[in-house]
Image (cartoon, rainbow, N blue to C red; front, side, top):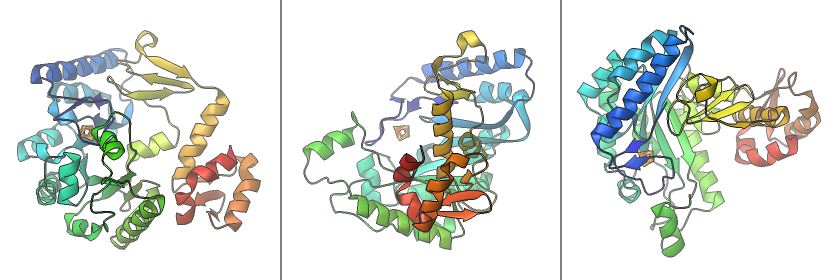
Length: 347
Ligand code: SF4
């Protein structure tokens, strides 16, 4: 469920989101989301969702009361309901409201542990403020994690990631995304125009990710997907379902969905008329997409499902890029660094 509103625009962000939108418009949007859910209830599908993900933008800039109300009868027992939070929005009243509304998992965008970088990103808080916000989150949600961005350019050059700084936070999950320099962002303009702002080299990015992986492993996290680490039992079930190739509904202006070979965008319901189909994939493209998702995860590729890949995968095992356990081929740490090249050989 996509909520495309933010306080402002972060320097690196090219996601579909708008800043400075009046509260009235944001709340209207949430009501539209609630009526989409109402229509799903009326279609008689019953309890249908095993996971729900509120993403953005910043979902909590909208009044989610009616959305939670309509969502409740559609949730399977034990459904995972995740919400993305911005540290500046965190307060006890909101956290209590989210918990009462059925949320049971929170992901807070921290992005950097360095104050100068946070200021440059235009995140609007310091590391200490993020730490305080996460402490509040943990008082309400045990299943809580953070997002970080690696590779943000610094005029002082590449900095060592001091990830031990979050060791006492009690985070259960950590997503670490590599910065993609996106056209149209203020960061892209500055990297192009200001010679003092230089992107880290590929080697520096890899070093940073190796160091983060080592530190998170020492803190009891396991890398269950290239960009995601979790403590045992706290993997994001929603993302795992997407990576396994299960169908999902995308509700909202920028949300994507998948139903068989169909890909939808900007859908507001389940009916064909309103499904916003943007593309119908060929079975071959669908298989390639599934292969890519599987390859990125700890589960890896079950050779019974992809026997045509065996020869190439066995060669990658010899080269130390892939390991084999039972029927499953998985990327090693080194293989994760060159995942795209491995995939190219497989398709
Ligand atoms: S990074 Fe998140 S909070 Fe910042 S502009 Fe993008 S969607 Fe909004």
